[in-house]
Length: 370
Image (tube, rainbow, N blue to C red):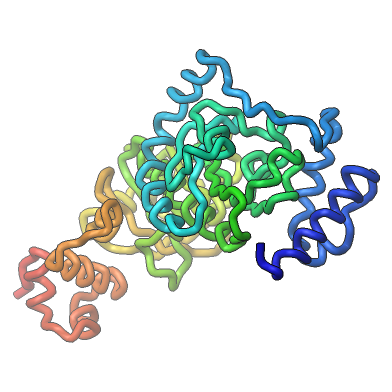
């Protein structure tokens, strides 16, 4: 253990003594170092209210077989969306002694990936499919906290409620589905590992990728990529809005729900005409022209919108599945993006790229106007 970690662990120990032994508020020492961590004390107090004691043994129970099968079946779509993301995530953390855990919305483990030391019983216990890692079952963890607080969290060693879980350090982020409901949680856990609070950012970024995959997997006729004016569309930051043939919203990622206030009520069925102050049919027309639109909202604000037909993610987005993109396709996509940035003005796009207008048309498979 590094000397730099000792003051941090001492502050955690003081906070445990204050809250768990004396029933007082967490010490200033912990909150000075982590002013955002008031949720830890809230979680500890929920555990105490359930009648738990920090020195109780933790069973790490597997849910009954029937419940486990139901959880796995219900999480099929989540697993399909998460699998490629978790594979890349495992590569990113391969040298850190951390591994990835995926749970459903109840905190039941439905998937794992990464360098898991199966000879370590502590790793085995928490990486079994069907093990219950919810707060009522195992106390304060990144999994239970992320599901309760609905925000990315970082938790180190003694910040867990039970002494049995004090060997773990973990980062977690909730996963929100296309309907706006929490569908699960992504966790990165290390055992007796060095503190890595930057994993909170990594797990949040990975969770966003899974949420986007869940949105795109929702059956739809039109996918709208959304961003504020000036934002370059085509990355993980985009809002994603799925419409059916009649313009009804059938799914959205959290980014779209944050940009479009009427979607904040996930229970209400919404038509895109309630979101955009324009003829909604023109969104479908724009697909054929492959153009980005400046779309007014009823609030007086405006968004950039790139409409895509179902299954048409664009070459750059399709390439993210395996990280490879043929040079020819990359060139074409760069030209297409330049035309979008120029609002369909081929002359301006050609000038920006330093190529002829004829080359732009040839690369995009269009005829040069006479």
